[in-house]
Amino acid sequence: MNAIPLLQQAASGGSFIPLLALGLIFVIFYVFIIGPQKKEQKKTQEMIASVQKGDKIITIGGIHGVVSSVKETTIILKVDDNCKLEMNRSAIGSVILDEKTKASRLANVPEKTSPFSSLFKKKEKKTEDSSPEKPQPPDFSGEAE
Image (tube, rainbow, N blue to C red; front, side, top):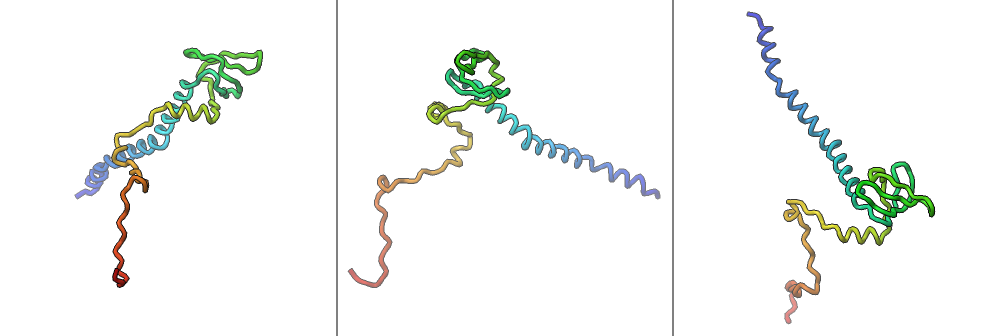
């Protein structure tokens, strides 16, 4: 009896394992590369959309200036007293916010909640003023009152 055809059939039966490994590689690739890249891109788009008149920005070319007007797809950037540049919103590299502006914008942004936030919500600690007085543990020192 020839055993070679039997061994070939046994070896070809494991074609599910490489497919599973390929799927696992794709999941790892998505978690570590594609997911964070999408999150960063969304954050950048939100930053560009929130630019307002008076914001200090740095363009992707390294030009520093103050936004003097905002249009739908472009902004006018005041670089110097007599120098204004019109550029696409996509050329904004970063927005420099002072503490007051940052605090006021964060106050207007609603807090994001996840569907599982109620499950993992931190419980608020009660203050001593609002809680009733804690009972004292019994005194077992042996002295009678």
